[in-house]
Length: 75
Image (cartoon, rainbow, N blue to C red; front, side):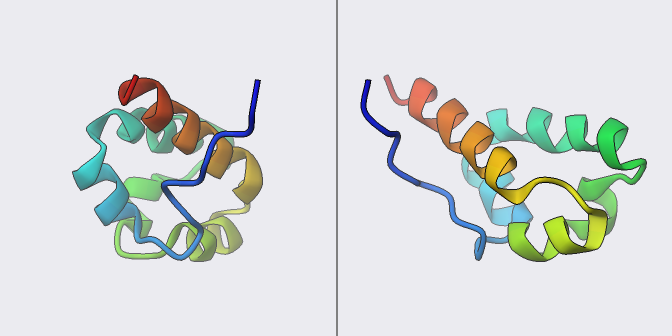
């Protein structure tokens, strides 16, 4: 199985990702439990990379999860 191409990168704003791919909202909501902060409430206008720094989540894992969801949606 090949590597999934990145449709979403760390430079993209959370708002843009969720508005273009509604199914990714669940990933950001899951981060609330992990970080103790509502990433969608407090970081909606941040890039995913900025949010990872601010809230302390694993950027690479979250990008992988997001791109996997988008890839599966487009099948």
